[in-house]
Amino acid sequence: MEYVVVRNNRALVTINGVFRASISVVLKAELEQAFRQGCQKVVFDFQNTTFIDSPSLKVILKTLDSVGAENMDIINVRRNDKIHNSFKRYRIENYISSFV
Amino acid sequence: MMKNIILIISPDPGDILSVCRSAAEGYGDEIEILLAENAIDGLDKISSRKIMLAIIDNDLPDIPGMSIASIIKDSPKLEDIEIILYNMTRMYPHARADTFFFSPLDISDFEIALHEFLDYRLNSAMVSGSLEKAIMDQEARLPQEIETDSFAIRAIYSPYHLLSGDGLDYWYDKENKTLYGYIFDCVGHDVKSYLLATMDIMPMIENSFRSYEAGVYESLSSFMSSLNEYIFNLHTETEPTPMLLFHIDFKSGFIRLCSAGIPNIIFRNYGSRFTMVLETPNYILGFKPDIEFREEVLDLRDVAQVIFATDGFLDMIRDDTEDICDVVNSAKHDDVSAIIVNFYDAHNGHPDHKEEV
Image (cartoon, rainbow over all chains, first blue to last red; front, top):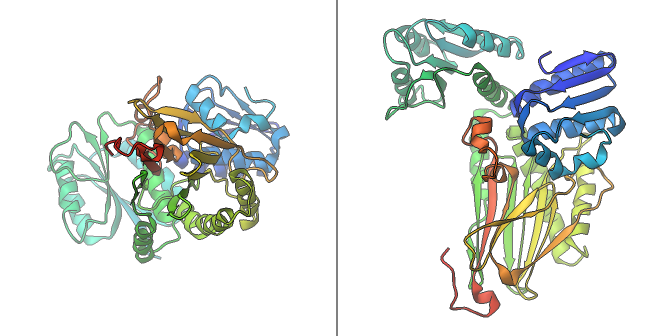
């Protein structure tokens, strides 16, 4: 898988550069595969992400809806203003305790 | 089954071929990849087979790739072929292609462009005839400009690729001197988003707005909450949809607005050359069923211009960091839509102070 690494029961999602619609199509399929492999938790790591567009935010919202806030971590968001502002738009951080 | 053909014209297709093969795997047997080592060979294949996508190296041994691209695009029988032209060193007049990549090629940018094209072309449920009709319907649905002594309102509507997942409308109640409108963004910029916007979301808002005008809802906030409830009942899988509703009352002098995931609005006050931003962070429609939406109120007396826009437009506004075009390596990365309202000072009792629009 290109964007998802499975470790124990966690799916670690890392996007380098621009997280855009075309990537979100692939990512959605990879996450489904990770869930089939038994993953129950998802970690989105934005350390190396420079921009996220709205279709990609939708993948995150749908993942959140599917696994529940207690099983989702979103990390390294505040390192980049553009990324952080994208999340602030939808107040996603209000729903996720491990949003850093 | 007739296959969709990708033709690569290059003496050294290398990474381009690998990326195409990898992308084609995601479509089973639907895609066939052909190779041509030079321009003449490429033209021969183009004239004998029905090509969906031609990926042309500009640095061909016999004829420049950009010349081949122009020949194809100017031929009535071939103009529908999508062309990606790469290894460009500069733009010449009459260079024709759908996408250009300059040398040195960033293969990841190419990969993204290829995936976007294939997703649009092959995941679309529409055949070409209905696509053309949908484009005409989309244009017909756009609201006309309205101009009165007090204001002028107009729309910008630019799909990322043929059809937009954005939607907008506005109308003026002359009797009550009230302007109503909305703008939303079905997240994504593909045919699926367009169908969701036109078949589900727009009818839902249009119907509910009549109730709002009739006073069924006490505020835009409660109106938005009812839309949120509605959107959860539309489909088994709820589609998150950023939305903004507005209501401009010229009698009382207030702009009322309620955002659900439209991050901000832009406005400019009288006498100022500079626009300002009103942050309106809020939960997106269709995210959670039990959330409340906040209504904002602006004093109309001070405002000369207000712009309600989707994030495809708002993302492009320059801030103190990098330009978005540099970040995404593209002049435009999403559907772009906006409603622009210019207020004349007449609504303040100064009819002689009418700003240039």
